[in-house]
Length: 431
Image (cartoon, rainbow, N blue to C red; front, side, top):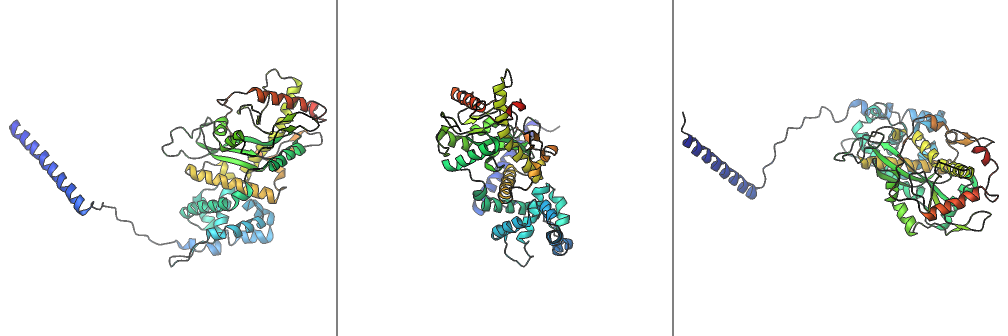
């Protein structure tokens, strides 16, 4: 049997030798620098690009199908790209410089038109990159890069032109006049609402992106004018947040509170003499303020309350329709996007810009998808309501409570809606 004392000495000697070896190693790294790490040898490519991908100019969708549709069936081209050929050509002309790459000895770069078409088709259909590569003959890893590149080019080129919130009293007053003309609701500067866009679970995010519906999402909080265009949008919200939390932390509310947003001063309502501030309209998730109007509670309502709720809901319907048209036009928003939150925000912002661009160039396009009213002002549901739609944000009451000034202003609007100055002939039939 081995002597325990001898074993102990051998063990202590081994520890001392190990410490000496570590010391020598540290000295060597200090003098010579760290030793290079061993890497697994990289597997050699069998080919740089597969031959069937190189034939995209002969058999790909961009050079065959899109050319045929442009020449023979413009309506199908519009459905395929979610825009008429004229807007596609305009966009290509404006973003071409941002998408053009230098020619190299390795291979020819992809055409800017092909990049734009692939991106728009992905936004329109929500198809996976692995499925798209066969029709367009572009590798899926290349598609993942060019989609971000094209979305960034579109946002940089168009965001300031098509989705800049008004900053002057005259511009806000014009929106309010449109709400009055189209929806018979005065001093309204926009309808506010939020929707969820599903995404994969972000790394190290915990439950901050996990919403009450049971999936991970990024929130769109948007302000819509009377013509179904997005005036302002915040795409940075996390799925676990409520409408009120996102709005209370937004730049829009900060600018409205400090007066820098440029709202017009309080003015009398039509055919009235008492000054009423301009405001936004929202659902019950928002706190009632002089700059935010919402419905009366459904408990113990009078007929006057019901009429006011009908009038406000009729005006607020524009934001529901805008989100419905957006999601049915760009169905990538209805899928679970396998991207990081930053890429999801970029794609959503691109869809908002394209929606506004098409709405400005072709205001009557896809009007059949919106809610309409017949001659008796009964609502005819739009086609978007029969399709998949974005999920609403849960109506959780925010930290603020309704204040007296907001309640007083809502009562003034209620009395105006029920008086000869502001009543519409059909409102009694709607309660």
